[in-house]
Length: 301
Image: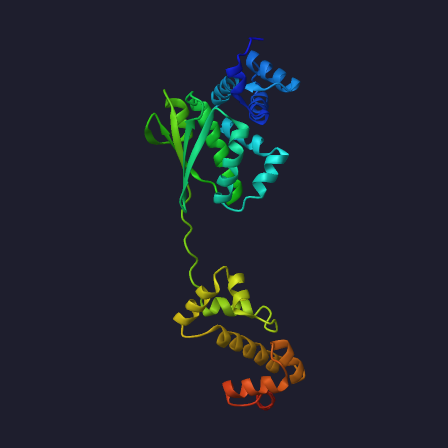
């Protein structure tokens, strides 16, 4: 094995990085002197030099962008990393966490990030002198894509800046890059806001369980909107949450009055009213007669 200088030893990568590359190359049926050397180093617990890792990634990049993604997915599937990633609720959490870990994984390079609501911009730059190879940069890009997808649950659109020119896909970048990958953008389409629920949508929800103790916040959550959004949607139709809830409960009571012989006290409870008197009061205000009178009229007719 070639003798390594102290400088070489100082510029090593985390075993998990080399392990992910080796695992994916083995799955692709690629075995060379380089992979054997790296495997021997990992097996004996010796550090893997940065330059050897770079050559492993060159071999991996020869199989295309999917191979780099597969290596990134394997890297992030290891138990400690999976647990760390699962603890990140947002991209901001992820980037903060990644910044703290970056030096443990790779001392030769570093990433610089800027994040907006729908776009993550990353620059991959040298930390100790040597410019990252295209394969090294695109592997880090693949790690970002995999991690961001895990945290957000959404696949980003990836555009790579190649030799100073932005806008390449990762596959094109692998084929055309002659000097360097400057960075990449991960972009997500903005989610269209959900339309404000209509009174009919709200009634359909409430009618499933009219006797439930419904509150505006709970109904809004079930409809997938903020409480204020639900209020505004109802106001556009000249109504309120309480008015719609009363309508649903009166409709439910009316159905039970006309189709069953249940006592009115039971009907009141089933429709969500406090008691028989509460039902009678609300029913008379809305329809101009009591539930008992409505039932008698139905029998006569």
